[in-house]
Amino acid sequence: MRRSAAAGRSTEQVGPFLATFSAGSTNPYLNYAIPDDGASPSPADVADLVSAYRRRDLSPRVEFLVDTAPAAEAALLDAGWSVERQIPVMVCSPDAGPVAEPASVAGIEFVVPTSDAEIRGMIEAQSEAFGEVADVSDTDIANARDRILAGGFAVVAWEVATGVAAGGGVAEAVVEGTSEVAGIGVRAAFRRRGLGSAITAFLTRSVHTAGGRTVFLTPAGVPEQRLYERVGYVPAGMMLHISR
Image (tube, rainbow, N blue to C red):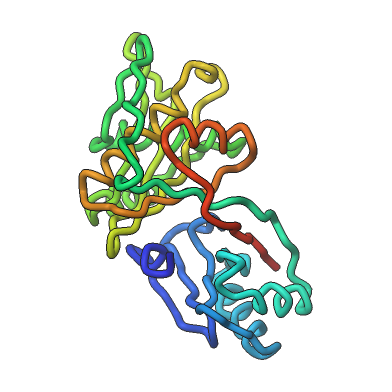
């Protein structure tokens, strides 16, 4: 996970934390730190981590598998950090069996975005799906294209009749056989048609084809977990998101 998060981002080792930063983005889900295995951060380590993000005008944030660094959670809580959520991590390996075929959804075409319009549509659909303002800048489009050119994966679901982006999702470049699928979002008007499962299956199969042996994601809740289980994902531990 540390190697995957570092791909395409600038990094800084701050005590027992690998801090990652996405150029041109303040999105907290693209700017976070991961503790080393067995990390036991001191108060000074935590203070240094806060400073590393504050001087970049970013919110200090950490994501990690709880079992890999149990002492890190206590150290961050003692320093006044707050738990955002604790969620299951799910994995999908080609060794466990075939991924479900991406469902065919009437009137929808699944496209790997390459043009500015396609990338913009994907980001706008994702933003709206997550309740965010879809104010997509040229920098956002350039960053997304750079991630794809660097080996990352992306898909946008287009409604053929209207040319409207119904949803989208991305996956990180494969690093040592590992990739994270993220940002699976479907606009409200297009939900309950199987698009979420289809987008997830499309990305997962693409990563497996590119050599990914361990593909992981973190569901937002029980409905999403069930959706990913239908694709072929299984629980594999708990992830902690914590911030200051």
